[in-house]
Length: 202
Image (tube, rainbow, N blue to C red; front, side, top):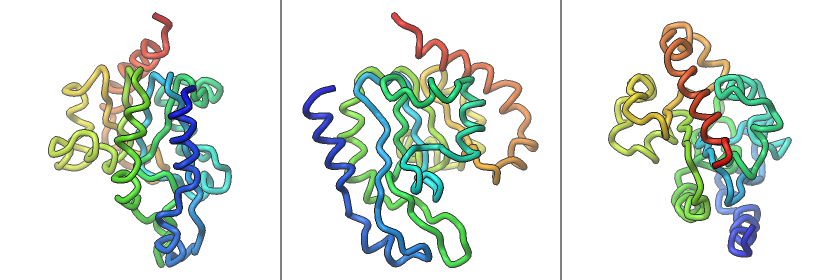
């Protein structure tokens, strides 16, 4: 790991840009950036933002969403959490908090504006990118993702085998998965092959 990447990791960990924003949420919490990457990573998981459980654990996808995502990828926990091979970088590094109705707030755009381009510059060996949810898809794909997650995911063949737009693996999307059986029948087998190939030694 380079000195530049260690410095970047430390600066992300110390980021408090959203202290006032988070303090004003229903959860009134302090920032806790969750940064999970090393320069040798081959797979990039671009998600939305950490949830409450991840805020507590300091480790990404330590919740049922993570179980589902690992199943989609065909990876066990050890391989999924190997930072030398898998970078997990959401559009915001901190838990955004809940609104008054108990729903997750969206990732603050200031996080991606401040950090994302610089972080990605330090990941030169990415072979496969998973765009999990609409926020990541819009940032990485631009206008192509303007029609929403379902339309973007339906067009997955236009981006494969190096980029896969995915719905969020939250339990809230269980109904979506039932309405869209093509996702498990057609997309997931190709995704699992792409994951395995991206992790192969060359």
